[in-house]
Length: 404
Image 1 (spheres, helix red, strand yellow):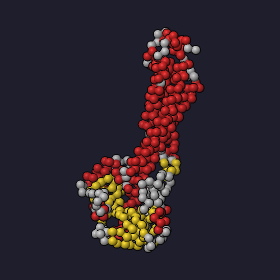
Image 2 (cartoon, helix red, strand yellow; image 1 turned 180 degrees about the horizontal axis):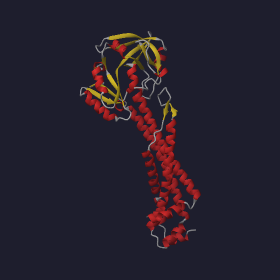
Image 3 (cartoon, rainbow, N blue to C red; image 1 turned 90 degrees about the vertical axis):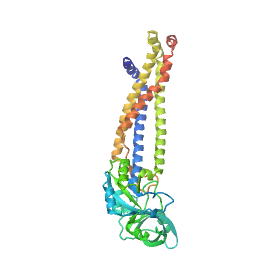
Image 4 (cartoon, rainbow, N blue to C red; image 1 turned 60 degrees about the vertical axis):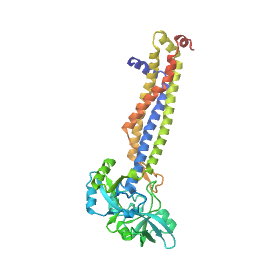
């Protein structure tokens, strides 16, 4: 087979214009595939960051059974215990811990009210666990001037005819079943940072929520941040061991399972685009080889008349396509990887669906994906050449020499 490689290489260069056109198509197709792969990876990474760093934290710890829909979440509370927090912080990979209370309440302007989903936290600790939580808030921070200061979703504010500085009333049911109400003041409007966030959100300080719910010294969950390079599942397993069987430990993908549908949609669209590019590239290779076989029919007949076996005729055509595929695949993979690196360095602004804030999407360069694309191109080119190669090998010397 190796002795046919020089022949295949010479044949590739016989029609330089056609080779250049085919090679350009292969190169651009592979480059586009590598770039789109980096784009999809960057988009998924951005959504991941918006969810884990924007509202959930990497890991959450609850009392066992907390997520059971039949149970009252406020009755599944945990102590706001310094020793317990220290135990969580001591887990390798955990960098910060934020205690929270999440609950439903009624927010009213005095004449009309609406249901809100409240998250209460210590703003300073929350900023360590979810540094992007307030990206869509003016100033990017939650620094209350008074204990009763709250952040309220923009849609809710508009519905209640309220704005920054407006007094409102929050009413909530306590774990005992009794109802309590407190005055709150709108500090700023609260925008969304990702596609899954509810527009009926409100955020307040943990201490004030504990007063409202009569839950002094109690919380409903702990949100954890972790090292960027740590393995999420391994850290979650270590946290589970540290807190014991009386607690549930969930990673953010488990809590945001709907996001998996978004990832699957991105992968499906990506697969369709890659398939279309591959079909265009391979059809170009197949067409080039068919034309080459047609032009060299008499030459093929001469070689067969001189004793060249059909198998070697077929192999020479396949090798010729392989040379095209390898050249185009390698050059395209290099070009695509360089483009991904360049765009990654600068990024470009993108507002994900459901987000109220611009973010920078940075495509993820992947040497492995570039290699797979190059190899896939070479293999695809060989497969695309099988039909023209088989057609050439089935010719008889007499038929080939009679061809005009």
